[in-house]
Amino acid sequence: MSRTNLSMSISADGYVAGPHQSREQPLGIGGQALHRWHIGPDADHPVNRQIVSEMLDGMKATIMGRNMFGPIRGAWDSDWQGWWGDEPPYHCPVFVLTHHERAPIELKGGTTFFFVTDGIESAYEQATAVAEGGPISIAGGASCARQAIAAGIVDEIDLQLSAQILGSGERLFDGFEPGSPDLELVRVLHAPGVAHLRYRVNRRQSRTATPAADTRSAGS
Image 1 (spheres, rainbow, N blue to C red):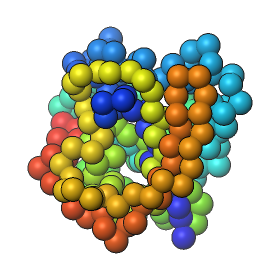
Image 2 (tube, helix red, strand yellow):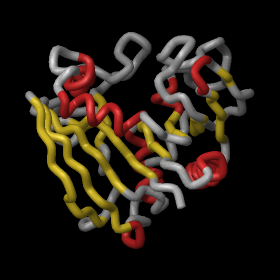
Image 3 (cartoon, rainbow, N blue to C red):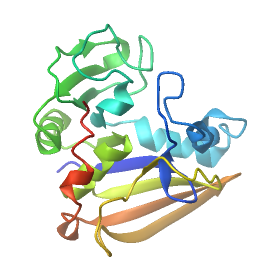
């Protein structure tokens, strides 16, 4: 059975993206600071290299929200193919949640983007089918992650916790009842400026998010 991992960089006040996301500010105002651990001077730290490897290497399928795929809203009226150029870092099938149909986009290095219009559980079924027992990644953004947790499909959550305070933006755990999801801290690693936390998810207790908090995700 496939193991499903959710991995996100998060601020000390619980945000995974800042406010006012756009083409110029894809992570919102201040959001890029959450990713200094892997795109800044400490990217070569052995712990940070280990975490990046765990996030990408060997993944057999990835699920993401349309907001992570790009800033386009409404019908697909552009030739946008994602933020990552001709060879994205995923090297596996990627299932993008959206409300608007689009033909798959095949890029270099084994990445093909498939656009799923019937929700997170359909995306998970398709990802499971292609993964053939291999690991699946929930790549974000925040709303896609919340839907995955609420659907009870996440086995473990990796949070890269920085000391940044964003003040507003997109929270990972908005819309959940107290005590849900049911998390068990199983690993703590650290590098300069970041603590890498791994939680095991008790999937039996995870179907308690408020659906209304997540329907905007798939994206417009």
